[in-house]
Length: 504
Image 1: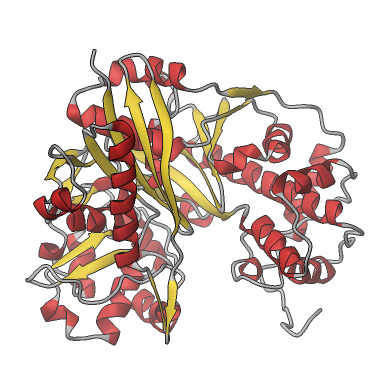
Image 2: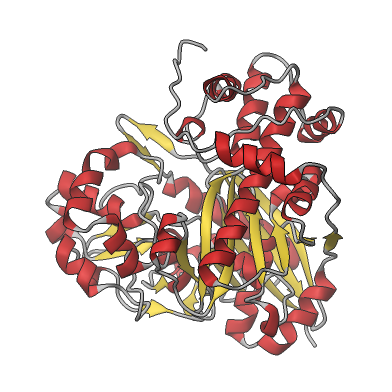
């Protein structure tokens, strides 16, 4: 068969990539075409995404890919969750999209929960209430800017907003919308109950695309600007990066509800697939949330601060004149013994940038633990804390679903940290299948091939198995594992750790 060339536009909260996927009927071959930085910009009191830069970088990347591959068949955009853009009736952005880290929501959080309590909201939508959620962001926007109630014509989540920029067509997609806190638990469509209580309009969001649709050809203006020799189809495939990653895992359909997944990167996302949302009191108390899969099923998961802590340590050390590569950090951690000191990676103390080493030491002092004597001990305690956090969340997933997990699939950039992967296997005492690194990109490409009909669902597993080598990591015996885990649970109960920014 003739090879099919598609482009995955994969936008993260710190960088963006255009990666091509060439499908020859047997396997998918990836090639990075272009990479660019994608950081929110502080503008006075607002933290916004530079959407003009994002669009321009995508167009530049497409021109590079076209020169490399000659013919491009389609593209799809996947991004992080929750953020969105607001369009007026003329199709113009009313304001630059905010980053989920913007602090405008702080003053309206209690007000929202006075209208709909956190647990009621969880039962209605399946989403664990959080400051980053679209529902709180949009509610805050309407309180700060009342004119929006009459001026907004469309709310588009980030991948769909980029799709609109490329085609002029408006369409929200299920997986990205499912991160918003705006979908109904039962219908998995936008919630009329939530909209009525908060003053949102269903017309702003339109109909949801489930299982992907062809959005349309790239606009004539962009086609001419980039000198494309044929129409490039833009597909609304899988829109959320973690949902995309699940499409890249070579798991037989019969096994997909028996395994856990861990997306390991700046954030860690730990979950399992379920037929429908789980909205029990136990799930709520465990901090679990529900998001959608490409096929319309559910992901029950928890978000955890991941390698962000390690990245912050690296950045701080570089500012002090010591550049420590991630590989060297792993070597340092492997060269020492555990001091059995732990942190809670999700403690609010560690969510903000700067002074990360001092914050870790403050946490250890507050909880009466041993302090690290060197860089290796510091890195190891962070990685062990992440692995124990994974273990705890996986146990919660098993408990609330009343179903054991047989295996863990781990993917994303974090799997390049071989120590974290091995610690995950050791602490959970489960086999870990690691790969692919570029899971969200691979899934993005698979979704396009499924929508276009170039690949069938029944053939996708064998194609994925041919496309990358997964590593199977067996757990090793850990002495005193139960005792270590009990200590971790004990010291991570304290959520209120004081930190003096002037130093510890």
